[in-house]
Structures are given as structure tokens and as C-alpha cells.
Image 1: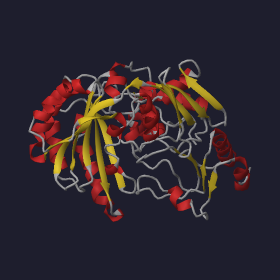
Image 2 (image 1 turned 60 degrees about the vertical axis):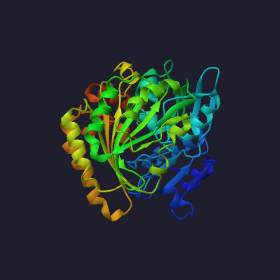
Image 3 (image 1 turned 45 degrees about the vertical axis):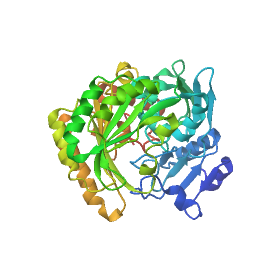
Image 4 (image 1 turned 135 degrees about the horizontal axis):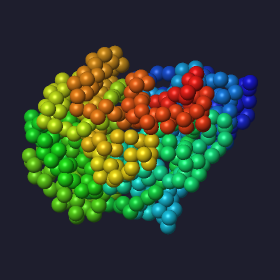
Length: 450
């Protein structure tokens, strides 16, 4: 057994306790619904701090939560009465422009990452909000604007450095610990704490991107047209289709456009979307890739109450369009949205067994997102999400994107992987974390769950 004073001696970063002035700020996360009080928070300054924290938690039988750089709407990055190992100060990004690779520490955000890679005219698939942490997004798969051209974030991962439950620092790649490398590409933070990620980069500088807005009264026809466009879209084009409320308070259909090829070619590809309607607003134009990545940042700032669910869809048939439009008409907050994220392209060309990420044959991912300000209004907004989820269930593949899972039970975790992959992940859990030290996640339970 060791004491908090021992832990303070063994780390160079901050050890923050409930009586410290920094505690309240340090314990809060992006989703204001989450209100947990850990016994201690270690803001790690480097890998050695992570090792010392893991050893302390294991030896003292403390619950562990791991915080990367960003969101985690489920709130799993913080725990009650345990130890939070916070990587948010570990944010360095090193780019090798000759090899077209970048190595980033586990607390980096996509803003950190894109800011460095863009200096060299390079990028890798990130998310759609630059304040998202690279760690959580990548470990769960990594949906983003460049995925249809270059694959998911996890498909561009070339190696990781990880601190295991035993306190060892190991590397996983296509050459080393290949079983673990398979597992971290979609299996989440179940096997250890990833302290650095190495990614493959691609030539991406100026892209064609932005937002097109259409009247909600034409939602059914607009989304049907969107379905037609995406059915034949080139890999370079990713368009997220949403029903949401504009900043001036008007419900709208929004297309979030990202074309990862030459902008002049993108103009031709996007033209049908611009000519349909016509749109209420056309904000699409050439821009640096980091600007596209940060387009939604202001709308997804920290401090709101957030609850969401998702499912992969086999497609969006007419009945599904009707149901989505009907359900959005009942939306309970102007900050909430229904989002369609198109899969396909390079995502579908990666072999099903190559990574732990599953459901590569899905046509779309449906995200049902509720956000609101007053914590007293939980019941209405959560109820809307659950009602939409139930009403659209018949159009789903039965699978779910693990990064969008909340506290939904073990069956839903299994649904993220399917039975065969889940069994393989359990075998990995048995090897690397048999005592389930890392269980504050969408948990792959070992054969002997504690």
C-alpha cells in the first residue's frame, strides 16, 4: 500500500485533491450532466507519471478513470471516489513530413494535431469538432470528414505506446504486439492507457467545405435528394445531413460538406446540392482543412447538458425519412439535432477482420443528439432521444458506434462489435487487463469480471 503523499513524490505533474483550489475545475468534463467527485486527479506531465498513477491505483485497489483531451459525452473520463489519470497536459504533436507520419501524445485534441500537420500540407482523418480528443475518437474508430477517402482515424493508426495495467510501457503496431494493435483500433481504452499515437498522413491542404441550409418544410424531399447524391458520391465527398435549429432560431435541414480533393473538382461534385432548393444559406467554399474541422466548435462548446444515442443504418428508405422528419418535429430543445453520417468509400474497403471496429458495411450512422441548458429539464430531453431511438430501431443494422454509446448496458457494448469480435476482445482483455483495472469505459469484461 502507498499513500497520496507517495504518489505526489512519484509524479512530476499535479496531484489534485478535493481540498485543492483547482479541484472543481479539474473534475468537470465537457458534458455538464456529469457531476462526479474523484478522490484524486493526476494531471500527468509524461509517461512516467502515467506509470506511477497506474501502479498506485492497482496497488491500492482504487477505481481508475482515464481522461484524454476532449469530450466523452458518456462522462467515463471521471469517476466517483477513485483516481482520474488526466492526460490533457500531454498534447505535443511531432510531424515527419518526409515519412508523412505524425506522433501525438494521448491528451492532444484534433486542433492540436491539425495545427501541426497543416503546416506541412498534410492531414489524417479526425472528427468533425476540433476540440475532440484524438485518443477517444481513434480508439473507438474515428468518423470524420476524410474517412470516405482515407478511412477512419483508426485505419490511419500505425502504432501506439501504451501503459498496461501492470505498469509496463509497450508498443503495438503491425510488427509488435499485433494482437493488441488489432484491438486498439476500435476496442476503446480497455487494454491500457495510450500515451502516444502515430498516424499516417495524407496530402490535404485546401478543401471545399462549409454548410448548406434548407427550409425544414422541405425536409423530406431534401433528405431524399441527399440520399441520391450520397449513393453515387466519390470517395472525396463526405456530407453529414442534419435536422437542427439555426443560430437565428429557425429549424432547418443542414448539409455539412467536406470535399477532400481539389476544390475545383469539388465545385462540380457539390453543384447539385447547391442547386437543389435553392438553399436558404450557402456557406460552402475553399478553406484550409483545420477551418473545416473547427466549423462546429462554437456550437458544441463545453458546459451544456448532453445526452445522445446512435445506431448504424442499413440505409435511409422512404419510411425512415418519414420517421426522422416526424421525430424531429417533436424536438424538445433548439440545441438538439438528428445527424446522418454516411459511411462507405474507404471505410467499407478495409477488411472486416482487420480491426476491432465493426459494421463497415453500414450505409449510415444515425446520431440522436439532445443538448440543453437547464439541468432540471433532463426528463423531457432524454425522453425525446429515447423515443427517436425506439422509433427508428427497425431501420438499423443492430450495431452501434462505440464512441456514441452512453450507459446502455453490456448488450449494447456487444452490439458495437458483434459476437465474434467481442470474444476476441475478451481474450485480449484477459491477457492485458484480467483484473479489469480499466473498466471506466465501454467495458470489454474479462472472463473473470470483478
